[in-house]
Image (cartoon, rainbow, N blue to C red):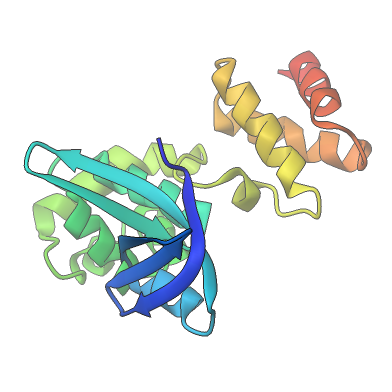
Amino acid sequence: MIDYIKGQIIELTPTELVLDNHGIGYSILISLQTYEAFQLKTDAVAYIHHYIREDEELYFGFATKDERELFRLLISVSGIGVASARMMLSTLTSEEIRQAILSENISKIKSVKGIGLKSAQRLVLELKDKVVKGEGSAATELFKQENSGIAEEATTALVMLGFSKANIGKVLPGIMKDIPNAKVEDVIKAALKKL
């Protein structure tokens, strides 16, 4: 599985990015958010969602892990495909999407081209609890700190051990505050005592 592709920007349009990585040009579909993030850059890291169907194979790229996590959460909803999710991320910011889901703002979600009333209602119904629990957010967005890399690694490990992001989100900020220079394993051990 490809997590990211790092390389030189060869082409950049509002919908597509071509990254050269060691002589291989990767065609990557992007949202308007990602386009704006990469506009003034010559090199980029695109976080990849690899989409494979019988008749097609596509790379969807994102400027941040947070945007990719939200994209994956959106496409988990029945009736919301990759094109609709990309359109949502091009029309609204990640935070606007989360707020619209949390506040059950159907009209804001419906304002996205291709999203009708039933799809908007389904999005709110299926994702509200998940957004509240922190799903669809990268760990760095949950724990905005200088040592967010350690927080992200610890979160990933704890999720793999079976704990929810919501519960991890309750204990990790306190641990990170109490032990600011802790190693990943120290943070995990401290979290296991509190979870």
